[in-house]
Image (cartoon, rainbow, N blue to C red; front, side):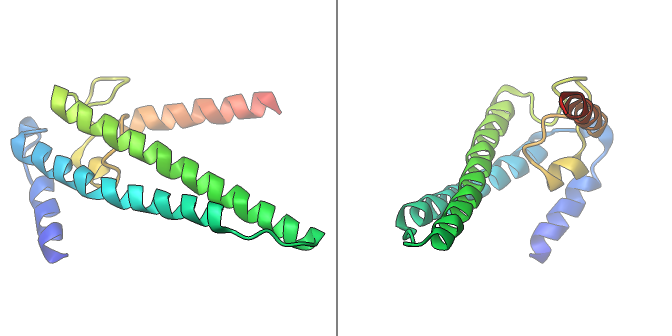
Length: 141
């Protein structure tokens, strides 16, 4: 783990004018490629649990089963979306668009990418998106 921390500190210490250089791109490609099979395994486990879960006979058991199934479906949906986001991030690395905001074209920033390597938006654009979503949710109520 200390090697990862050292590598992250090294990336954070790089000059801004050398943003998304080959070393940074290689780091994020490797991180995404390491995360991908972990997410696939979690998705496989959730799907297996959904299939293997035994239904109970009475109404209370049935309600418990349905709640557990609902939670597992949400988890499977999250993992499926994360896999798609990882694939999209790897594609952005290939075409030279990784690390730049899809809305503004500005750098997303190493710190944000270390936290969320699948990020597509810079922090400001993400905040605007969340405000719009919050506004639309309030209007729909």
